[in-house]
Image 1 (cartoon, protein in one colour):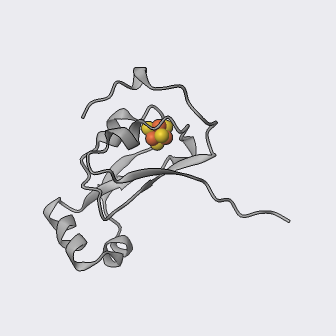
Image 2: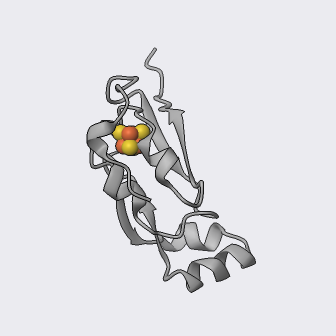
Length: 105
Ligand code: SF4
């Protein structure tokens, strides 16, 4: 799927409030999120060993079929909640959620 980042809806949040969450049971590493994100939040890299081991048998098999590559979010703090990645992902693997920060008392 191609989505023109220039046609992105107005950003809904300042950076650092909302971040994308990738469901590794669904992600197939196709990279649509990388292509559409105007903030360069995503990379496609090999699934981490711990994340792979945490998957069930069927999802591990699916990962092997799809080359063990998944979306990572090294720049998640830059997300501005435009929603383009959610719309672009053909596997419906991305949701947006509020970043949880430890409270300082
Ligand atoms: S909502 Fe998705 S596409 Fe938009 S800035 Fe955040 S990570 Fe990037």
